[in-house]
Image (cartoon, rainbow, N blue to C red):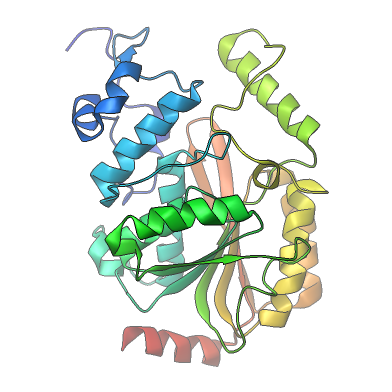
Length: 324
């Protein structure tokens, strides 16, 4: 190994212990999995094979390889301009949710958490359908995927239809009311063990563009006049009136009406400064338990906010059903 080679990055070292992406990418293997990736792989300044993570086509080719190699997805594609998410971070959310459902377990084996009875609602599934792909592959979970974007639903449906193992695991539903997150999606008497969500970060298109320009300036050392989003993203994926704070406030308030329809409501929270407000919002509607689960990838920190309205007796009954 060359002296210029560096050890695994902090982002890999800080991933969840069951995350399949703990080690640096094996680009030789990934190129075999997806030959189209080959044209994007070049040595970086340390002499290691890598891709230009500012190139959306390169990121998309990498995702195709990762999803096929690690999660058995033969067909995966998204339309131009739609969110192309980083797979390791998405997998982390899923693994921490398994821990949330089974807090008494500490097994390093993914199969110890496998349970095909578990059903999840992914709010904002997107055209990429990544959370259902990972959750169904790793733990046997089934998913309802909702989105306000008809094009996103159609492309996610194409992914499901072209991967046989997803067909019995994923149901996609268009949310016709952009002011609602749960209502109109969860049916009467329908229950899910988990609600998960990666909410829009920003309050407007201008805020999203400015944030991306700052990110590129920090990484490249100089700003770009017209930056592009390397991971893409449509308006509903990147911004929401009032931003992440308002989106999550709406989700929390709406969740009360579905108190017995879900075991754990959860969402990623990108901005730590929002937590105080979100705790106050939760306190007003009276959940029986609230948890904050930290996540980290290198310099990027995030967290999962989780809450439930179930009493101890209701939780035990639900857990008993899952263990049958």
